[in-house]
Length: 312
Figure 1 (cartoon, rainbow, N blue to C red):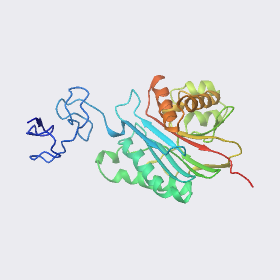
Figure 2 (cartoon, one colour):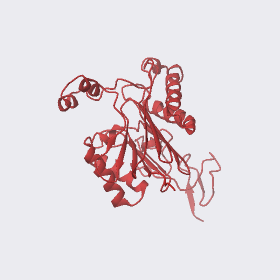
Figure 3 (cartoon, rainbow, N blue to C red):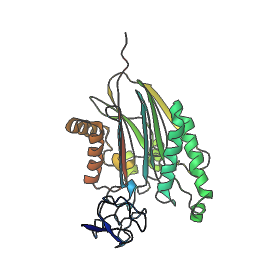
Figure 4 (cartoon, helix red, strand yellow):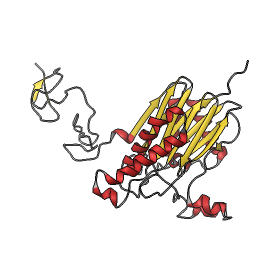
């Protein structure tokens, strides 16, 4: 009779058993550690319990596929050791709620901040009140400083946020930080619906040369964020009704940093949609695009097609 070893306790048990009789862990086929090949050896922290190498974490790559209504992908990228982005996507017939958050890497537990933000905003955005959803996220993220690891008090968990509520052909977006929302028409350049809360945006508004400002090391330093040390922040919002078909795109700077030109951004989105055929495949294609371009940051992108309502 064929026997098998439990990956957790190494006790030998009959193949086909559902659970180890000694430690109780499932004996179902589990992913192997990419370094030592041990089946099921990867712990919840992403490290292999046998060789000690980082094998991967659940948040390294996540997808939400809502068919023809919406899709989103978040990916760790190539340079960061973890994914500090988070996303929320829920659809109800023609209604879509979407939230993207990017953890501030210089803060403590930025991955916790971003996940907390999208969960808090997502739980309240169903009403269509994007401002209230972002304010709920701010409260939840600020509370992290007083809980969990005491190091959070010295370096408060922080993140950016962009959220959108799509109700038929009406779109409302809100944001704090430099995660962005774009409108990508079927033809022509993309329209950036948000304005970055960043050092570069601030000095350009004061008259600085845009190209020189964007080359400055401080260019992407954010001037507004969610967190206990953020002070009183008010989400900025925008609303519009779609006149022609197109796609609403929400993304973190891990994508738009490689597509800063509006025409190039729109061309990449349309190429992904054209070549891949489905929203989820196009979202994967855009994440791959950023990784191929360097993958210097975590990448999150959400795609929502929106068309004008038919009139009788």
